[in-house]
Image (tube, rainbow, N blue to C red; front, side, top):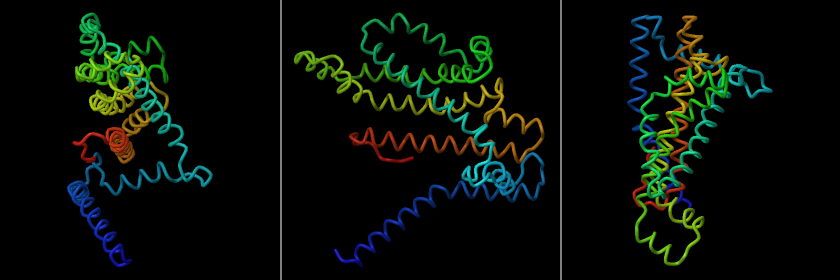
Length: 277
């Protein structure tokens, strides 16, 4: 392969990548442009132009000292604790949901006993139970993490039960005929077969975790993104308020993109996996 051919291929790939990037983000930047123009013409204090929000965001997060990689104390005092609560609660909910889901999915009558109980608790909106978690854990990370776990566990649990029950009966009979050890069979056959549904539940629970992080911090927290958002709103500092909202959008997008990248890698054996984000 000549250098000219290699350069041409790289050029085509870069051009194709830029074309996809422009296509995917064209509508977004068009809407931002419309917002900028409308905000400057309307001059409403409640809807500042995106450039003003961007300036407020940069000042809020990236004007720290060099020793902190230009990150401000606000990032360390509010953003990182919120990220820890979100990811910690989500991981605990995922681990509990998968473990319980596999056990109940393999049980013949397990869901008959706990199914009505799950339907009852799943019908209660998690934000409505925040006062209960405040009584149980007090104000602080315990209450917030408990709220996230309670709300995020259901998609993982129910999807795992459904995925485990959908394992091909031929595989089950084959494993029994060869007297395959239960732990090996669960790890090598059940979990991979239920993997797509488990990942679907985990992806849904991740967005629920982010939502409940904000709600729990709005109600009872001394720091965090939700608390900062409420403080900015009460101070009528609307550029700052929009900065926190933009950060939540960025976090949601980043979480989703990172999760899909992991999912694509773990489930790459699926022929229908297309890699779209």
